[in-house]
Image (cartoon, rainbow, N blue to C red; front, side, top):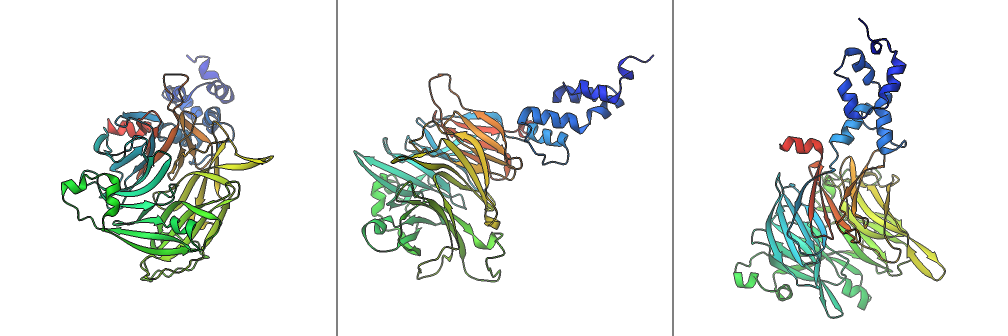
Length: 470
């Protein structure tokens, strides 16, 4: 005997089913073949996505149902683990190239290396500096044998920046160090045994060009007493060989962030000539240059050069992107195809200049720098006068960024909409817990790590990834 439900027409069932959530829709699919057929209607799944992510959302997958599944089960928005170890604000986090290790550093002056896994554990820790000195950047070399650390040494009113190399094989002992005359130039790796500094001293006190200097170090210290010396004593060691690799004409800019791309592995713009059979060790060096006048435009400058050349020449940039904004953090994608950075635009009011509260996250496709950059919004700063560093991260489908608002933002790259705000709020309603940095796993975009002012390292996973671990 037929029931009233069996006599309902498709439009009526669609209208009823439109009030159900995704779990209820999946449940009614098991009721009968007719309801299964109706429940597959794309309008139902599209309505659910619009309900959760807004009507501006544009589909990326082949169907709205598969798109909702991607956004529900494959986005790293579940808190999988919280790691303790730091005793003050954490400023930076990064994965090693293999994704097996995580490095963190911060206001407590320590550098920590974590073994990533189902249960991430602290592998090594080194107290490099004592407060009020701190470390604000750390980066693995390709071989994952050393980390490069930018150290800010504060004594009374004076501030000195030192780039230090710590050996993972020697328990994060300091094996090399050089002065970095501009604290915001955090340096980067050029080779496994070579890092970059900027000769800012010449910039300020002579008419010499700004030099980007390759520092090749020799990890030949085995004496435990020498390895345990304070950071400053390593500056006198003679195990670092300096070689300028590029000179930039002196102008009204100072170097800030720097990134290096292997030219031979880069999918270059067709307008830039490249010989695939060339024996030159060519790299693309990307430098964010900050104007000496903070309310004047800043810029991203791209240099292509042979890093093995014995005599550096004054280099003409192959590309300049002018930016009227203050830079808050820069990152490369794992495949070196994209660069992502956070910025706040500058505006003038009367005789004063301010930063807008809107924090924009911009993505530039390095394979085709002529394309219009992608902009991701909704992140906001708490005040106009101060610029805090908030480091973003990028994967094939997602963009993530820290914020001053007690959350980490997560965007879908295809729709450019916020798909999650990862909570970092503290139990004290009056306490702020800014998220200073995030990092996607280099080989698994369903894993994200964030660090914040509350000294905790948080590891986020998708529902799909957590299910695979069980």
